[in-house]
Image (cartoon, rainbow, N blue to C red; front, side, top):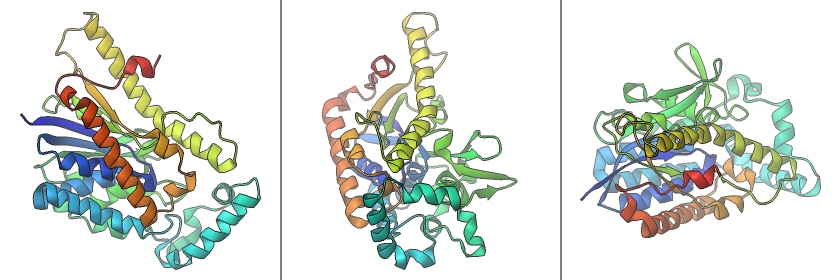
Length: 338
């Protein structure tokens, strides 16, 4: 029997290569069908690459599409540099690392306070744009295959917007990945958009449609817990971002937990609201060992390491919980909020 699941894919810059590893492993399991994907930032890129590849060549096409995506990302060097500045990456990285090691300041933090991507004027280029535009959007927005939902944050209202169907354009993906200290806001229609992580990392509610499966697998790349209190400026800012990017997701998980309690206590009729079966694939030990700067500075070694970690995390999840898919959720919400 084929098990249908939906995926909720977090964003986190270059750390999204972990999700690539998870998806690679899921695509190898012929007994699991990916019915829908809700993605933010790197999660949106992974979802779009998977769907484009699957539409073109099935599971093997999806695996090839994801591999091509991350091979291109690995060669960007530094998301904060425009395309014409990438050759300077090696020297600038060495200087940045030396300053960070010698002084209790964050060069990135200081730069964010005195510089914005608008400072380049007409010379600014988004290093992700060529990568995004190489995807075949006739497949990305097609009605067949996994349903894809991409979240971005409206700059003026602060509200999330979910792009789906014909609205899944290159601009929608670039909007979802738009960290405001790194990239210029993406204008779609009359509105400007920033990274979807501010309002949903990722959004779960698009996956509640009646025709979609109850099972929702969250692939998390932002650590849920850090045992050490951050002390350096960069680590403090990174943890602030992790907490803020988790806030919207935690709000949705609380709502799911509340509905489950109502159903379990007989205070809500079964079937009135979707009784979501949640699962989580993550490896906080891997993610907490990485420095904050690696989210913005991909390289082939980092991408390969995270891809392997994602495959291993998915293997471990399936070994423990594959029999639970289609039967019950495995994410302990009571313990999460206990």
